[in-house]
Length: 458
View 1 (cartoon, rainbow, N blue to C red):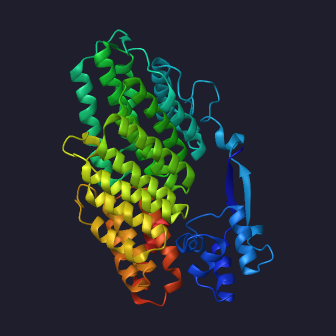
View 2 (cartoon, rainbow, N blue to C red):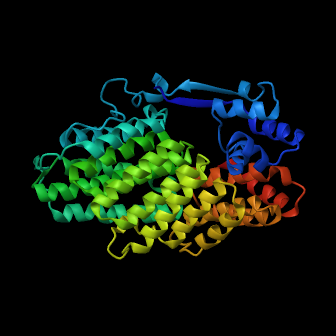
View 3 (cartoon, helix red, strand yellow):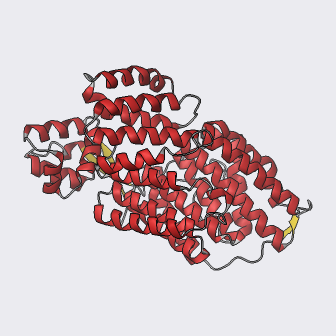
């Protein structure tokens, strides 16, 4: 069955709020009538989510709107050429797109072509589109494909353990810069490193043991390139990097890293509103993490599954996944976890809990966890701190306190200084939309004055 992409006429949320208020209904009352959470309806009114055609029809019926809302929503197939086309391949040698290569050698060449295209012909990559459904086949191939032959390189350049360690160390430096300053500060540097250094190593001479370690290191830095691309809003390109990273991890036999890459896919899908795909990818990550004995990644996968359920308005499934996440986190020995999951601590887990409860409209719980999320290293994870401040502001608003939301919102604006992150910008823009109806509140007015130039110049 073709996957549908929703197109919504601007002003849908405003009209929904007008119709609801004309009927004298609260968000909770309307939610009970249409079988949606009041948090989901809040996001529809704020413009943070797009309704399906069926939800729009239910809202029309509940509000007696005579099809007004349905007329503002249309669905088109995600299987059209625009949604699934490979990256601007005008001469057959650009990035191959989203396929999971049949063997490790083809996987290496496909990844290297993406890196080269990104460096040399990035104008062809600007239009790369994102489709959450395009993650499904690579994830399925990861779960079901047989093991590759041993990765033995037969090139001229001799590659050894010091080369692999250098790749890991440089990746670690770039990851720290990404966490502190945002993807815009590191993305191009990471891609250049892949194209000019890592590609040459992968085409070198090495035995099976070194080859597995090298492919794992290459998968790790490719994932970072995808994450940084996602952070700057180049979502179609980010998706391609994550798929290639997953293929390289498969070639390396690195199950733990593969689970982490699947978790990143779930994260991106949830951020872009693809609830069912976010849940499926998180479950695939959790299954892989369990097989690898990576309990910390199991906890991460469970909380990402919860977030997928939350944005879909399924409170019961969200609660069950959160419970699994908390229990797995308590069991995890994070001292032995890979260094690339060092960000996953109690503050990060609390932030994810907060996002879930905010999506469900539970302002009290969202506030509690958002406050806990700020007990973090705000210097090393400056971007994450900005995200968590924006979350806390939204949580205060859900709790009916626009004054406090505006106050914390100003802190989120200040925390965005120096960040080059589209997500940081988007969190501020979303908060500004949510606070717009409260312009008569002093703190909200001050937030609006502070955030306006940031949004205009971002």
